[in-house]
Length: 439
Image 1 (cartoon, rainbow, N blue to C red):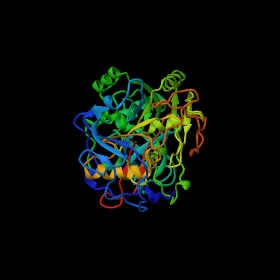
Image 2: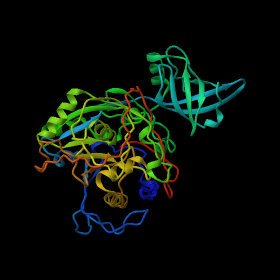
Image 3: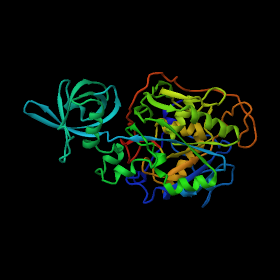
Image 4: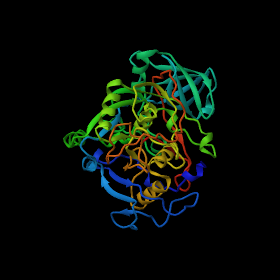
């Protein structure tokens, strides 16, 4: 598909620089697709907005409903299963001083993929200040690791600002040093407009984060509180955790004119045997699988067989979902609002339909919703029913097993411990040049 089909204008003031005062007080747009509307232009959103929403709209079957995140328990059913990504964000944003004889220069780094015990791939800004063999010293504002100043050597310079860093420490000692000298890796569209604040260390982390390894937050999960989780428990909605260490694969820019020319970078994930069995059992009993965030959805779809059953999984995935993909595992998706021309907007367009998502984003922009990592959320219903394993009853009592077409890269077997997420996606209009994060 042409990538310009996924472009739209976003006013700069719709980009959230801080989260809502309370996590579960963020707004929630419920999107229920209807029949396709009349043909649309290749770019931009339909006007007037079609659909039925609180506050107005034309009366067709598409429904857009304005709620808040704390309403989620009443929007789900007893027996539904929420699937969370329990990855934990490391302090992957580093500022270092390049040492080259008497010459000094300050360079910022965002770690995005660990190669081994002492080597990381990172995005450098500005990379033009670096050459292979340069020595970098980290530790600012008096922060150095307990063993002294952290240093690294530029082992290799790649494309698009990517460099390979060989650190002076190894393994757990390096992890400890990064935790001391690093900052939360806020997306550039936030970090480029304000300084990192102490509160970001807590707010850019889900309350259920457990397994360290992500270099960007699974931001749909940022809306959950212990109070909301308790209300979901009381509603009879089960909770399950899987792990996908958010890396560069999801957020790299789609530079190709056609989606077929874009290649995702790998991200490491795991679904344990017990979790896979519990999710299959929930679906067999008529419950819906509700993915909290696109990272949870991508891992579930990677692990699902053609019959819709989820298999245990541990390894890397490169799955890239665009319209035409037939979903196997996920019945509902909770996610944030995404960047134009991003793989994530392509994914939600595949899930709920491109025309529906254009209408939903037009509504969100017109009604003051906040976008991106610290922004508001939407609860998406599918445009087409997902595959239901043979013999299992769907939410409406139907039985489905036809897997339909699938657009994905096959997962690879070798695990990777850590990853980094970053996208540079052009925004037409006043927000041009900003980059994105997950939701």
